[in-house]
Length: 137
View 1 (cartoon, rainbow, N blue to C red):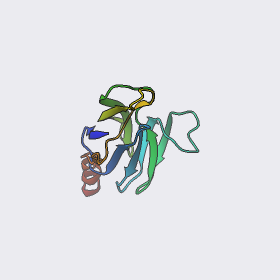
View 2 (view 1 turned 90 degrees about the vertical axis):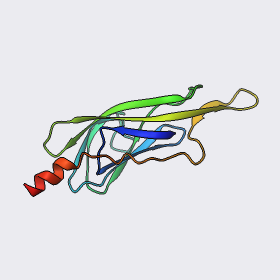
View 3 (view 1 turned 45 degrees about the vertical axis):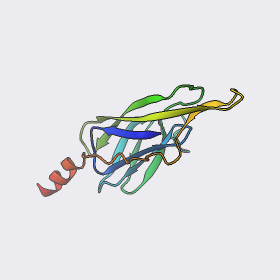
């Protein structure tokens, strides 16, 4: 994955997408818990595939970003998720990345993966503003 983007920008929620299986991590660097609303979380507590989970400060969780299995062409891939900071309404964020695909000489093994040295650009964005402002006020 290359050229990862997260919109709208947030500052204290770090989202990284890497690897050939479309897995990502979301890390809460905020001073307060963040709720991931209906995310495709990959852990022991989320058996249904889509769960709502509170992410405590300085914790992280794996999520499924995109299904790259069987994909034969590169291009941009994106998914939209919802995040709730404190008691605020859930806000939508869109994570996108460019995918590079490859094939073997025999043509049997094809697939998409992250490129060597791919930018694991952090989704460091500006949604911490409301939390910081709330504490000052």
